[in-house]
Image (cartoon, rainbow, N blue to C red; front, side, top):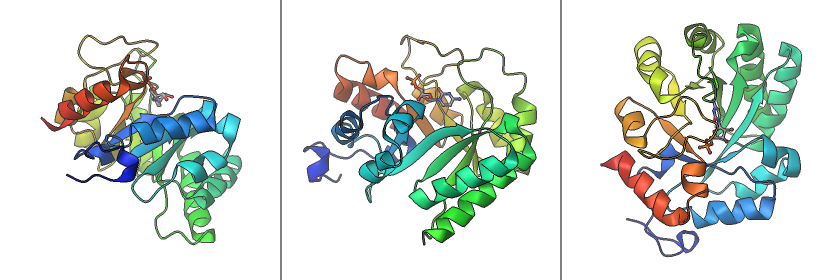
Length: 236
Ligand code: C5P
């Protein structure tokens, strides 16, 4: 195992590249402190609407490190031209992942993917961000739109989809896309506003590529202990 100054002496655990920490806070300094504190377990940090609307692109700049990728969860959803132009700006930032709503349709998704490629190329990045199509929010108990949205993600050129643990078998059977899974809770953990939740072990067993972890760790009385337990559940 590897240690470094940013890990605060904790060994960096295997599998940290498949754990994304949701930095759902409004203050950028607090977000950086949280990302650094939980760095041993999380190789990806997710900047969502709250932090991005408060701090803007500086959030990406401050959080990105060689051993930590930034997941920009903007859930883009607008007409194709607007999404394409916004995605071009995202591509210039150097993020690892970005989300778009598949309910925006295939043309919108294609425009977004093309914008990301163009933006990454403008900025000289060899790696473009992975476009993730949000299928059905994990707060929605009704996932009946999922099959059509998975199809839209494939047709729109997305590299992955965001879905709950329950839809993982369908993603793996019907596509080659990366599966990114929020709504992760330890057995018996509080669901909060999520409707379609699952455990880390079930998500990994069903083929999840990246787990999005928020309150299961950030709202725990001991976040380091919760992160270690959650990480262990994904590798045992
Ligand atoms: O705290 P919790 O683990 O529920 O946080 C989940 C995170 O994943 C939040 O940042 C939320 O915005 C995000 N997310 C989600 N469902 C989706 C896509 C993203 O919960 N379908």
